Length: 199
Image (cartoon, rainbow, N blue to C red; front, side, top):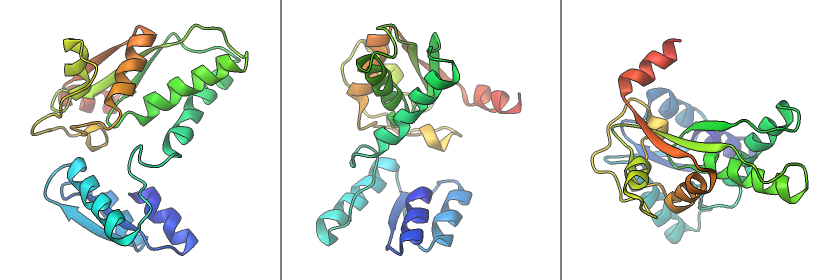
């Protein structure tokens, strides 16, 4: 929401943002400071997404929700190119990525495919690991069950709002990247998240 509000403010466009009412106050303030119309929903990110989709149908808004527009994965893809560039034309053995909606993981996977298509790397890829909070781990649960899709996580709870996504829209693409890379999905406790922030 913050980035959309900022870009819209810069372009002189109206922005309509919806997010859970328990979103971090800093993000709420930032969206409001950019002049966006903000709706705080009593629910989760999917509920906010449904509200925006309704506004798109009724008012013709352009939807910028995760994977509802063509640019997010393309933008996240640059992480894969940056890794390749910073490692002098090589890729790391593994990538552990905090995963909510999964666009970062999917974008990097796409970058690696494109690097191979351009002849800049061979067929070897990093093992991709989706890291989720124990209190909201639909990809981990699907991975452990060997499922192709992830069932929505009921009553998600974690201190990490960026990965509190109970029903990732691109669950099948996330799981495919994990399988194809020989990676995995791992859930971590909130206490471990806090501890790692202090390191």
